[in-house]
Length: 151
Image 1 (spheres, helix red, strand yellow):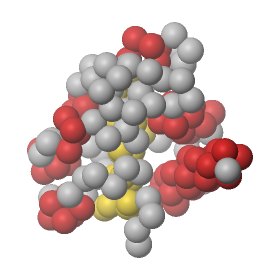
Image 2 (spheres, rainbow, N blue to C red):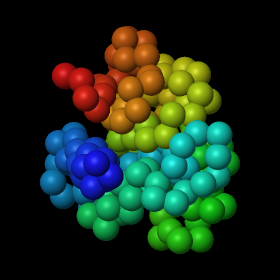
Image 3 (cartoon, rainbow, N blue to C red):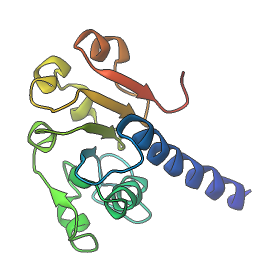
């Protein structure tokens, strides 16, 4: 049972990477990707086996410039992943981004005004891997949205 749970988690991480490549093209060099979340789960600074950081690292390895933000886990994330960029605030992290990835379900992220945020990005595209963003509100604000597990 544990092996299957691990396999599901690995497939979900790969699915986020695949969706990012669908949205941005297979060559990610020069693409700016923002990752909301570094912690394994919200309300903690624990990054052990963090899906968000695994995805961020994989996208960086494919040539993207990846900026990570998290309310509590940035200091812990910087140590094992110094090659990633970091921003203290979610809106600043998304500045000129080609794609936003919502990877840890911090409540702070769901309260951000998507219209205000869209004006700061290069391309208003979001992949919600947690399923906690109000998709209708984001689409009404001009975002192209993809939610993991939904059409």
